[in-house]
Length: 220
Image (cartoon, rainbow, N blue to C red; front, side, top):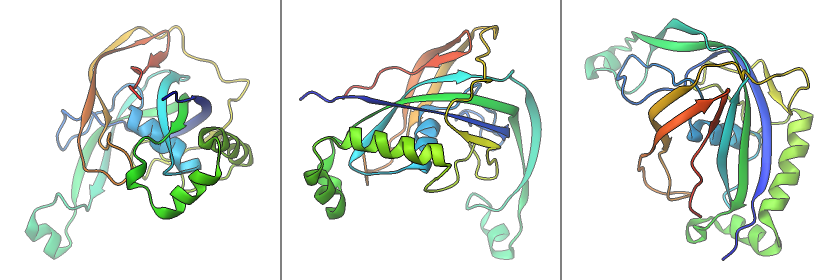
């Protein structure tokens, strides 16, 4: 079956970002660029629909890489049982990126896992001859208006953007950035589609060249 791909793009910038590497335990360190799952989450914050899939294709880094130490009070479920009972938090140390700006690229394709879709999504899908094209049009309209389903974040929820929207003419890709090799990057944790079980998938030997990171093409 042929799946037509409908490209979508957006720009996002903010004061702080953290794209957590999975090998750093409870002291997170950021990748140099967003992971594919983070890029998908940013696009889905503008418009989400279970009958399509957003496939991230590339990220362009549009601000110099600046790492910085960051401390936050952690109050999540990974605390010790006694700390949770007493309502005690603890300080979590992280290495974050400062003053970030990215251009994000993705393709929209129909969802192949339709047996798991809710009935409302299936009903809309049956009435729509091209769900990917419809999503692309609605997404672009919402992005231009500054509308979002939820507030997009730059990794952690506390890192909200200073700008998100269409590409700005004054934004330039950092093509002078030295090449960076990423030995292993988390791709996604729910690769089997809507309402599926957790299963971490990684991409190996990725490379940022002239400020651009191309993600490996997903098999449809």
